[in-house]
Image (tube, rainbow, N blue to C red):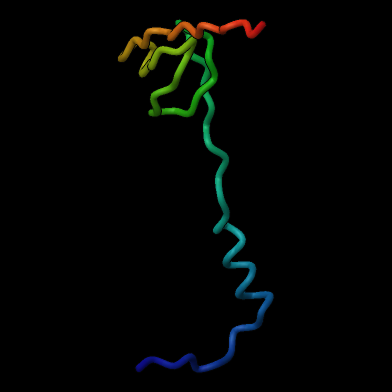
Length: 70
């Protein structure tokens, strides 16, 4: 089993790890719908499902009938 010949200081170890950080996710604006969304992901706009600027699935809006209580 390998063992280090000498101890690496905390500062030297942390300098090496400075590049290990999260990157921000890229958000794009669709040219067709104008909706902001993540890259390579499907997104909803006005109740319809879009991917790459094209409508994949169209959903019908359900009408809600409210009853008046007298």
